[in-house]
Amino acid sequence: MKQYLQYIIDLDGTMYRGKDVIPEAPLFVHWLIEKKYDYIFLTNNSSKTPDQVADDLNRFHIPCEPRQVITSSMVTAHYISTGGKGSRVYAIGEEGLMEALRKEGFIWDEKNPDYVICGIDRNFTYEKMAIACLAIRKGAQFISTNGDAVLPTERGMLPGNGSLTAAIAKASDAQPVFIGKPEATMIKYALEQIGGIKEQALMVGDNLHTDILSGIRAGIDTLFVLTGYSKVEDIDKYGIVPNYIVNHLGEWMEKMDRG
Image (cartoon, rainbow, N blue to C red; front, side, top):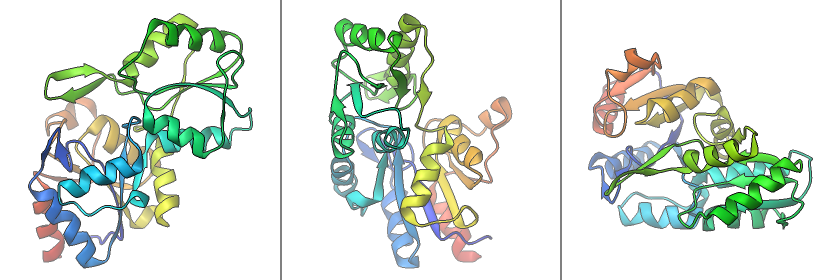
């Protein structure tokens, strides 16, 4: 078996399902620490800060520091900070997105922003959408933290940021630039932060359409874990083929330890 020195790990469906930890997840992360492999967590969730995500993981007994968390909000803020279009933003979103934009020094502007950014917002309103659409029609660049149409919750599948983004896109007659998985942007940013290289890194996730596809697009190997969203039959159905498949992360540890 090929040895990987850096692990880029999805959260929901890979480390936990909703409010329940996946039993093998804490053991897997402790195994990474014991082997001295670098690891970093990658999430499309734009609502939380790295500190909040790290707190959630530690409550599940999964060791994590804020520096080991990358959110779609962080990558979005970094992306537009290097875009050269300007420093004025109007954003729809929650604390995670707003903090990421503040840290990059962006200026809030509802009338003439250079960028309109859409992240998940459980307090989304018609007025917020109206402000966004007017700004986009005036020339602001339209950015979306991620295109997830739905969110799995204990209530069932609820509207995700992709659904909010689609409403703004329809009303403004403009298509956004998507940042989160399955775009390669997230993986490339993660590799930079972890100091990794493609040949030594492995993307670990449960969703073929986001986690695995993002790894494929970024040119790194992928480990598909059958503990969350996608099923093994989806591989042939959608033509998204991971390098490895395991029922749970305990199987991966056993395979690697056997060599």
